[in-house]
Image (cartoon, rainbow, N blue to C red; front, side):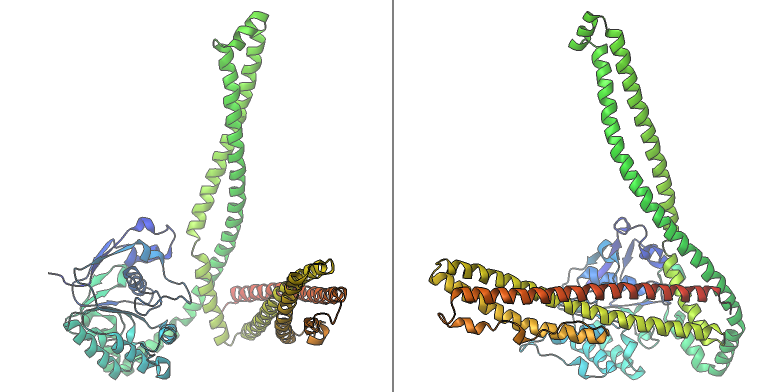
Length: 559
């Protein structure tokens, strides 16, 4: 009897969008169901074969956080998991696990950080960040592994030495013997040698059982160790011989992908225009259909035994009226048919464009990957374009730094502007109560007035801090802003707290002065923010232009 916690899975492909990238992974797209048979299961295969994608979907579908941790971990630094988990149903066994952990090499840092955040007096932090990467990797596995648990590991060997991998192997085997279940993605020939484990290969477009001795990890490692020098000589010689063919092939591929990206942009523009046309025609068709039905109803009434038919018969104008209504019904029908034909034509064009876009859906990703490789090749070569590429990358990097500084200044300005508005609102309230006091508002008006002034005092103090930060950020973007606002430039509201020291009209006058100064500060901030936003837009244009020049250079350069 199968007593595994996770016994298998099913995938409802109707819940995966037609153009989602997981449908393009042959090994995954070819399965509807999958069954686990042993406590330890390994997924192996080349990078990009789909093993980590399936493992992640299993983990999320089972209830783990996408970035790793126990089921109690709930955070997200970057949402990268596929929608495969939403289409997946996990078949669970009759037993319920006491423990569980999802370990991902790529997001381990985030999980270790959250472990600190989740710690308390009853559950102190294990201090994974205080250990080396390998030590913390092994420690987190040991701390959370135990009998009767479910453990999903993605490349746990990533930070481990061969000796530590052996330690992990022993711990996994012991826990499996005591009732735990492991599903592991690994390239380690050490871990894959686990006794009584089941190995599934994702290579060659299918998920199929594989013997340890047939895994690439074992075969390549064994070959390299046994005949290292011969292996290296053959490998490096082949690399040298095929480099020129690769360059030529990449040049032609890059140009083709460049053309496809341009075509995709054109298709997207056409799709947008056709969609707008279709919406307009659909609305028009509804109106024309209503008119057509109304005109035909008029004809039907005259041709039937209606009161209108009787009336026109009596006055002798039946034929004339019926002919007129028939003409109007015919005209309405012609207009409707013409609009329907136009809509069908637009639908056909739109479908054609959508089909073309579907075929071009991945061209931008492929283009960027090919472009990146081409740029690397140019930089590594002695081609004259190498210097141009390096200079272009330097300019782009400098522009990105400038953009970051501008965004920091804009955010600081927005924060200051928000506080300015709060100050103005508070002063407006104080002004209202002060006006009422002049008119005989009494004690309640006094209390409300001074409470608002007290709030304004605190807000202005906060504003001083934010204005200082704003000016500091402005220094980074090297623009001059007339924001010489100090605490002394604002009204010192403490003077008002001595009831009777000033007459109410004087208080009102001081409030008005403060409002004027704050309004002036607000205008200054808004003026500088407008300048900063314009500078950011200019930087975006410069970055786009520089990238376009770099792309053009890469496409036109032949190695």
